[in-house]
Length: 162
Image (cartoon, rainbow, N blue to C red):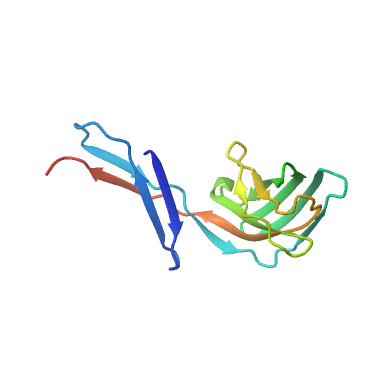
């Protein structure tokens, strides 16, 4: 597969996927397709806001725990770096930790939501937020929801001419 895109629709629990494949050999009889990981997110119940005040520091060592039904999320440290805020975390869960992902929201001290979070490609236990206000030193962080990996579907495509 060369490229995959998917997005949610306005209907609950519906995902639209677009897949682009590289050319296959003419003699190929079947292709197996495993859908990309899709997570079902559930709102976090009564997640406390964590106030962050960097002052003159660039890094805060937190070791703060947030409980959720399947276990505990520990926010290890948070740091500012080139117009972005990064946080590292670990999960202590009753299920496989790789099947659960957190979704955080970050606000500045004026209650303005910062950019959408993304996971670092090289370090999956690091989350990155773009910071809209360069000089901002105070933020509120909250756990919005937890995502549970849905079962991955595998399809077999028959490539023979009929």
